[in-house]
Length: 440
Ligand code: PMP
Image (cartoon, rainbow, N blue to C red; front, side):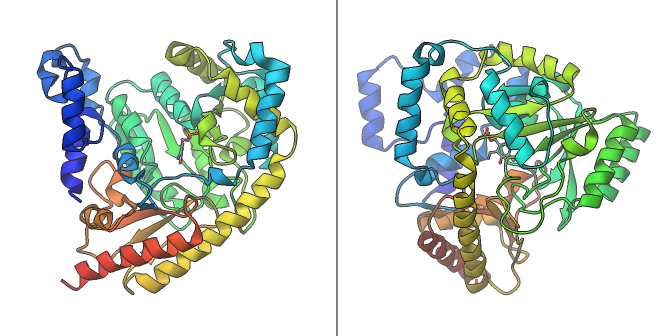
């Protein structure tokens, strides 16, 4: 498959190219339809910020890997086929009887009360106390990243993140024209010593970062967890320097072994940590319901930013989430998910040991959905992806998680979205293309 060409085509208009016949049909049906090549006609109308807006390589890759014959270890997809169809039907018909008019109506920007109540319970299950008044319901956790940038970042402002960081946050930082500084990690998470050196350097330059973005639990993409001493130090730094931290925690409840660690939000006492949560990985990304918990002055600005973006999140799916979480069945479902994903993680770890060369290394996540594998020097996972796609297997090349071209020998592998047999077969095929490159 021509991955490079396909990616380049997709970059132009955000859509995958169509087979020739399809293209002709579209053109002949709508002769006046504009094409991506007509860009010049509109370019002078675009805002300056669009110069930094790039389509997400992740979203582009998703379009390529959606074909049923592709074994995709690329997405961060939970296995929604495990949600019982009867429970779904029961919940929906219950809503139809109880709340049709409300479900079809606008709701408050901050979210409906029952969802905020469910959020308080979900956060409590992870040991974090939160006041429902400090919560803003959002359209997925992704909207929290967007709203935090909208609220805090002017063009050229510094944002600090981990290296590697969540590939889906990179286009958001770009869209708000942030200068992203990435701090390396080890098996205990972000290197706080390097963070302190960086903050001291920025001080000397008279610059103050707008926020520090971290995914402390089973980090996406690296799969590592920030240790307790580092969490303490990070919260202390935030207090000493009055710096905001964005704690992104979609995976905290997906722990397969070891003891849970306190959230930064719970250690901070409501002063400098903005917490991002989501129902995407513990129920469904399709409901598009996430949340922020934050110091009130910050939350109020985010609320205004959200109102201008979408007025409110879907009332229909909020009611669905509330009905489900307040019924109490979710804890049993979470147990099932943890058992399923733990098994898949182990299969992926075994398959990597069997199929990757001895010089390769990878992380051993205690939870979450991802393993980060690093291949011998000289290999490039962006090139390898093109070859892997021709064998109908996909992963995320490491460069997507950096802004500065690093990550070329690494790849992110997801283990939640496909079954054990496919995981084994996918890694076997990846192993083949890796060995072909190594043996060249
Ligand atoms: N943050 C991280 C670290 C993620 O992995 C994701 C989704 N993969 C999100 C935020 C956004 O999640 P959503 O919008 O589906 O809630």
